[in-house]
Amino acid sequence: MNILDYTATELAKKIKAHEVSVLEATNAVLGQIDKTEDEYNCYVTIDREGALKKAEEVQAKIDSGEIDGPLAGVPVAIKDNMCTEGILTTCSSKILGNFVPTFTSEAVLNLERAGAVIIGKTNMDEFAMGSTTETSAFGPTKNPKNPEHVPGGSSGGSAAAVAANECFYALGSDTGGSIRQPAGYCGVVGMKPTYSTVSRYGLIAYGSSLDQIGPLSKDVTDCATILEVIASYDSKDSTSVKRENTDFTSALVDDVKGLRIGIPRDYFGEGLDSEVKDAVLKAADVLKSKGAVVEEFDLGLVEYAIPAYYTIAAAEASSNLERFDGIKYGYRTEEYTDLHNMYKKTRSEGFGPEVKRRIMLGSFVLSSGYYDAYYLKALRVKALIKKAFDDAFAKYDVILGPVAPTTAPKLGESLSDPIKMYLGDIYTISINLAGLPGICLPCGNDSKGLPIGLQLIGDCFKENNIIRAAYTYEQARNEMEKEVK
Amino acid sequence: MANVISDETIDYVGILAKLELSDEEKENAKKDMESMLDYIDKLNELDTTGVEPMSHVFPVNNVFREDVVTNGDDRENILKNAPEEQDGMFNVPKTFD
Image 1 (cartoon, rainbow over the protein chains, first blue to last red):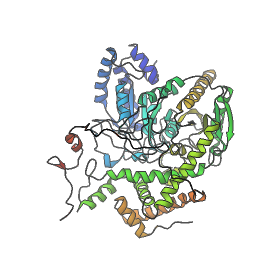
Image 2 (cartoon, one colour):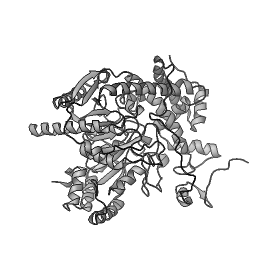
Image 3 (cartoon, each protein chain N blue to C red):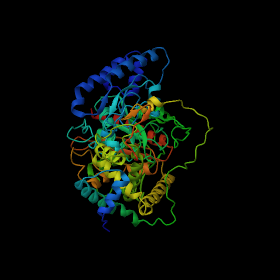
Image 4 (cartoon, helix red, strand yellow):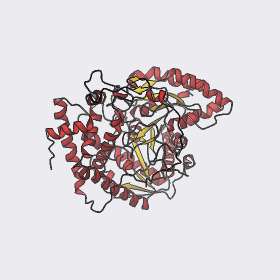
C-alpha cells in the first residue's frame, strides 16, 4: 500500500509500529507536492526544510516515548490565517505578504505537542472572504477532482491539499461555511465545532463572533481525532469555553438507532440542484435504514440568514481589519505625504476588491445613523435564527441537509456577482450565526463526477451526535462501495 | 426599496474605512453597496420588536484574573515585523507640526 493512501490515524499507527518512519511519510507528501502542486496551487508556503527537520525531531520523541498520540508524526497543512512562528503567514493578502509571526496559534501548538509535522500554509480567499479561493492574492487553487473547477472556499487550499494527498490532514477556519463547503466541493470531510471549542488565539480574525478553527480530513475517524487534539480551553481567547465533553472519538460508533434526524424542508426548495438533492436524500434513507428516526420539518428564517450574516460579518471585519495600518507589521506603501495618507494608501494597495467591499459595507452599517437600522437589526434577526434552531433541537438530535446548493462551480464564474456568490452559503451560514457544530462528508458524485457534500448539524456542545451519524453513514457507504466493486 | 448611495456617503465611508478609492472604484463601490443594502433590507420583513440584539450566542462575561505580570519584555519580537523601526520604537510619519 502506498503511504499516501493511509488516513492520518492509520499512518500514525504505522509510525508507532515502526512500519513507516516520520521522514518517509514527510517525503511521500513532499514528493506528491512535487507532482501536483504546480497545477493545484494548494499552498502559499511550503516549508520543506522545516518539515524535514521536524520529522527527525518528532521521530526521536516517538522513539523515546515522549510523544504517543493518535496523530504523532503525521504531516499536516495549516490554513494561512493561523500564525506559525517563523513561517510566513499571509492570509493570502498582499498586506501580510511579508509577515512572519513570532508566535504560534494555540490550535497549531496543540497539534505540535501531539507530534504534527507542518508541511506548509494553505491558500485561501483573502482574509477568508470568499467562497472559491479565487480572491487569494496568490492565485486561485484548483479542485483536484477537476482542475477546471474551484475547490470552494475560503479554506480551499486546505480541502484541496487533503483531496490531492498533498498532506494527510489540514486545519481550516469556518466563519460562514469556509471549512464545510470546500470539504463538500473536494470530496473530503470537514467540520466546524461549536463556537468556543477551539481557541482562536493566533487565528487572524475575520468575524470574531463567528470564526472557528476545525479539521479537514480523509474520513470521519480522522476528523474526530483531530478535533479532540485541537480543542482546548484557553485563557488567551476570552470566548473560550471550559468543556467537559471533548472525547469526540468516543462517538465513532456505527449505530444510529433511535437518533432523531430532522430534514428541513426549507433546505430543499428553489435553487437546489436536483442531483445534489437526490444524493442528500439518499443519504438520509441510509441513516433511516440503520435505525435513525428521520422526518421532515420546517426550520424557518432560512432566507434571512444571509443578509444577517453579511451585515454582522462585514461589521466585525471592518473593525478587525483596522489593525492593518502599515505600522506594526505587514505592507507599507512606498510614498506618502502624512500619517493618514500613509494609512489610506497602504490599505488601498494592500487589500483586494472583496476585502475592500466588506470593510466598506461594515464601516457603513456601523456608522452613526445606520447602526440601529442595520447592525442591531441583524443582531436581532440572529437571535430569532438561534431560537429557530433551539426549537428544532428540542425535537431532533441532528439536522441533515446539503452543504451547498450545487457542486463546485467552474473557475471564474463566481466573482462577478457578489450576491449570487453569497447565496451559495445559504445552508452553512446560519450554523455560524447560531454557534452550532456542523460536519460535511461526501455522499456521492454528480453526473460531471464532482463530489456532493452531506451536512449534518448538531446542537451546541453536541458534536458527538453528528460524529456518530457521520461515522455510521460513512461505514454504510464504504460497504456499498465494496459491493459495487 | 432601492437604496441610493451619494458621493458624500461613499467619501465618508472611505474616511471611516481608511481606504483611498479611484473614481472608478468609487462608482463600483456605490453600486455594490446599493445592491447589498437592497438585499439586507430584506431583514425589515421581520418584526423584531422586543427582541434583544444577540452579539454572542453564549453568555460572555468579563474574565478576571489577578493583576500580576505574566509576560516579559518582548520588544524585539514585537518590532520584528515593523515596516520601519528606530531606536526600539515603531517609526511613523510625522503626525503634527
